[in-house]
Length: 196
Image 1 (cartoon, one colour):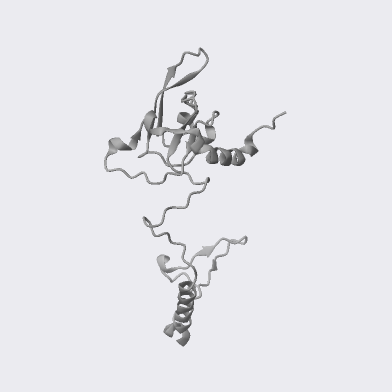
Image 2: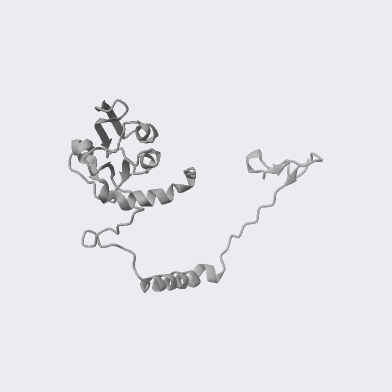
């Protein structure tokens, strides 16, 4: 009987499989004692203090909100809005693509008919801002460039019903959204077919 067989099963080291079938004990290297540098930890303390001192004198990127406004850039994805044409008509044709593609199921469209036999427009268009995750997929799916992400980031409210935005709350003149429309055209150009 070998010395290995006398060791209890729970205390035996893992024996890896070998082609010959003979058990080969795995060696575990342990360092039980720390040397004096590791005990004192002065090197690590100086590294941490050096990093802190370097970062103290770099420029800060923090915005002092609400005294400083958020930076406005066309790439900002804020509250979704609906574009309204200069003649007062709504660009949305109630196709339902934005409602279908919304991962949070925040959009609900109630389609309505118009005097034009081909054209439709929404009777009601609702976005539940408590569910909206500001992903911009509705904007990407819209074939009419009717729903766009605005730069409005302050959407806090004190009551749940105020977070449900209806058609009247969402309408914005297209002139105010032109910068975002140009930005999305540049961004989504790679998916568009070239015009012949």
